[in-house]
Structures are given as C-alpha cells and as structure tokens.
Image (tube, rainbow, N blue to C red; front, side, top):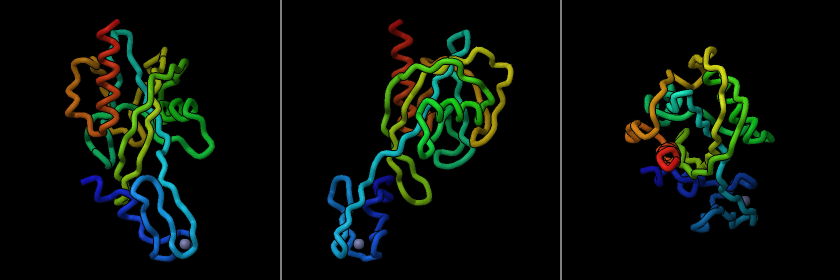
Length: 179
Ligand SMILES: [Zn+2]
C-alpha cells in the first residue's frame, strides 16, 4: 500500500536536532517535541506534456525506470529548484524526445503520489498542451524507453502506470470528444 510509505510513517527523526519526538499532526506537518521545529510535507511541482501530431494522436512514452517501469506515460518530469514550470516542460520534452516545443497552453493540474526510495512523494502535475511543429528529430532518451502515438480516446488507460496521468488522458480525451 502506498500509504505505508507516506512521510508520516517514514520520517522518524527531527532533521534539526535528531530527536525521535517527531510527531505527525495527522494532516500536513511533523512537529518536534524536543526543539519545537515544524516540518511541512508539500506537493512537489512536476510537469506533463500533451503533444499531438497532425492526425490528433497523442505522443505517449514508455517508462524506463521505476516507479511504474514499463508502463505508458506522458512526457514530462519534476520542476528543478528555481525553475518555472514552462521551462521544465520544454526542457523535459527536449531531454526525453529531442523535440522543440514552440507554444505552450496550460491545461490543468493533477495531484499524484510517487513512490521513490521507499518514500511516497506527493506531486502536483502541471499539464501543458505543447505545440511541436517538427517531429523529424523525435527519438527516445533519458528515462524514456520508447515512444508511440495513439488516439487519446482509444488508448487503454489501464496500461498507464501513474494515477495522475490516467486522469490527464481521460480529461484530454473528453475535451477532444466535446470539440
Ligand atoms: Zn527537533
């Protein structure tokens, strides 16, 4: 169960003084009974790219690494410290697929839970519709095993490993169907 790996269960010592009197408040922070410091658990910002070709098919990737290794995903990744979401999504599309994004439009935000190194990190996936004019440089690299184009309304969402990405694809397919 993912909830077994929440920070409330895994973080046992105060990072300021090392005390074991490090109690979870039941909602969003730990408080140290020895030194009084509070440490909040926040959502980490991540980005997701919706990239469609001229036929309206969506560009999916297959994950090279855990979590959810081998499952379908959308391009994107974590926002670095001090970076904008716009820069992060453009950078990730270049790193993973060697494509240049020429235009961005914000689509929405989707919360996610991401198990890494025996801790669940809460993320907020910031989703952008990305315009790509030239698909000729397309190649899989970085944490992407391979890529494929598929109609968003036809893809089997059970093949998508991450909760938030399933919701993104469902929302996008609904939007396309209403057009
Ligand atoms: Zn302390």
